[in-house]
Length: 158
Image (cartoon, rainbow, N blue to C red):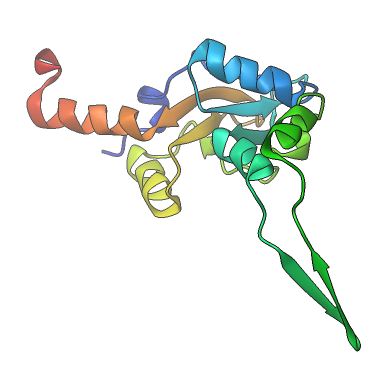
């Protein structure tokens, strides 16, 4: 029998509204001790996903790049300091960095198929949505690993 992901998903999910600033997102990461958050609209539909990796990419030193056009080549240098990049993030909207095409699991999707997505895509967690597309939970690799442990050794040993 294939068990649905809704049996093991976490239902107490931290989220951030699509109107939040990146400064507030970083504050939420720290306060809630998380490294990523689903971004939701006013109806709790997932409209994005933001992670610490998105933040790091925005402030990381960029390599020099060249753009060739006809007979000329233009070189672009990253001359902005790390600290200036960090300061510039504070008031930007979360949707400027958030991934917009978010893969979500359906509540009736099997645990095995969600495990397949998490492993092949190298995701750490996946939002879970109901039939109307509203966020109802999240599943983490660790949650599925715990489920595997429970199947192998019984819940009384956890």
